[in-house]
Image (cartoon, rainbow, N blue to C red):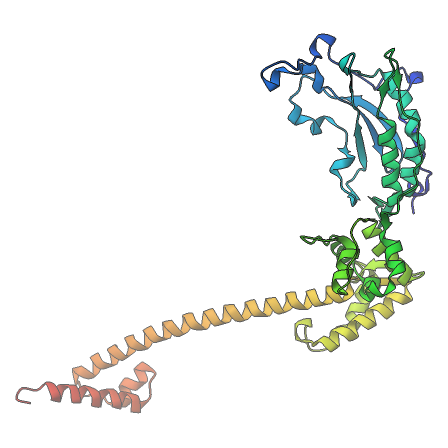
Length: 421
């Protein structure tokens, strides 16, 4: 673990977005008031709202380290290009799985309020007001940062039930209201417990240990990720959905599961104990101890293509035992060895296909040369110049008997073609 990995992650407003920094990084450009209007009596839809009503301000949160900042979009730009103006993705575009790197999410702020007296009112916020909002949500951001799942050596982010609930609290806090005097009010920050319908996959597996697959204990990252990415046409996906389908079990409706990958990685970590999960291919191909183990275990007099399943099983055990001596558990080892064998066997099959095609080509050539030789032999025999079968056979690389057969056949043809017969 590096110093950066172990450094505390503290929710904070980024430098440049604070009053003491003079809001140097916050360049807000709201539309003038004359561009912000609503005409409910306009006949055409595109004439009911002024061009400035599409202006949006946003709050950005780095779920990895807790940084918070704010900004806006260009109200003059086409609305289809909104995503390109944001520093990250809106929460609703992410789903409940892995959060794409670098883990920045955006909360778009609402600006429209409506009441019977004033009708539609657009309220855009100043840098000071956005800073106050950023400060208000910091406790929820801290909760999100502390509870989001971090997976693998690179700390990839995945939603947890707690982190998703913390984001709901952020959304709640950013929904402003205006009092009768037009003064701005933000809701108080709430700390909502994760509801029962939000379920951690790790807790689900702990309650249903019979659904766990022993193969997870030594599966490669890609294999665990593929298992977690299970997505059927109907019903639950992810780890619970796939495990229950394999066991012919049914999950009642109404739940949302979080931490699919995190649960599988945690299962493997517990199975490995104090040994480090290590990719089998990387260890065998790039480390001195791995290469030495491979050379020592190489099947004598045979390539991997020629070994049966029982030998692969023996190799798996031998490699794992050697890795254990180095404090490691090799992940994806069985898949790796079977892939190598399949690749070697594919090479042998390709060799056979080449040899078969070459034999066919040569046999076709041989047929043509044989036919040509036979015509030449018949031509020389037709000369009747007194040469013996042995002399002609020597020239044609044939046996004397074959030339004799050709001579007899030629004589028969001549006799049958003689006049009067």
